[in-house]
Image (cartoon, rainbow, N blue to C red; front, side):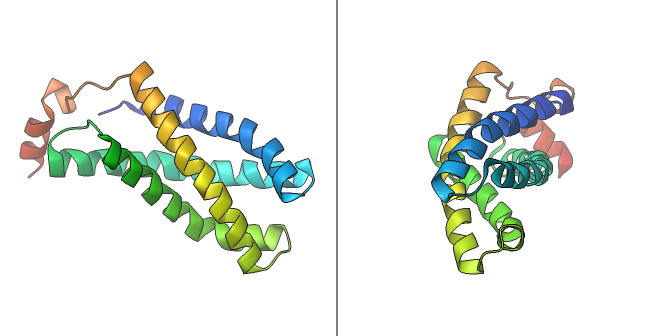
Amino acid sequence: MRSTKDRIRHTIGFEVIGLLIVAPVGSWVFGFALHQIGILAVVASLIAAAWNYLYNVLFDKAMLRFTGQLRKPVAVRVFHAVLFELGLLVVFLPMVAWYLDMSLIDAFIMDIALAAFYVVYAFVYNWAYDTVFPVANTGQGGKTAKAVVKSAC
């Protein structure tokens, strides 16, 4: 599994690059001032960063427990990205509606558009990150993934 330091690097990189894309593009696409989308994006990014860290730790533990490995084929990467975004949607919908003074339906449409972007972005970012910073298929203390799961049972 990845170290805490590696997970923090992963999360910071993900959120910073995401903000650099979402704030200006979101302002242009949705017709809100850059500072409105920017503030919302920063708050959402902080919430998402915490969720990202927790979600990825839990997802990796589940991968080890159920498959005995950390390698993520394309189907698992798609599932990983979609499930992550669904969790965020539940939190962000009321926040976006309140902050931008819009209906829940309009906030839902905006959230779906942003979630669609982030599903693709998360898929690409995580694949690229795993390529640049590969994770060994070992668990705690250099044990193989299967040995870690076996000792946890």
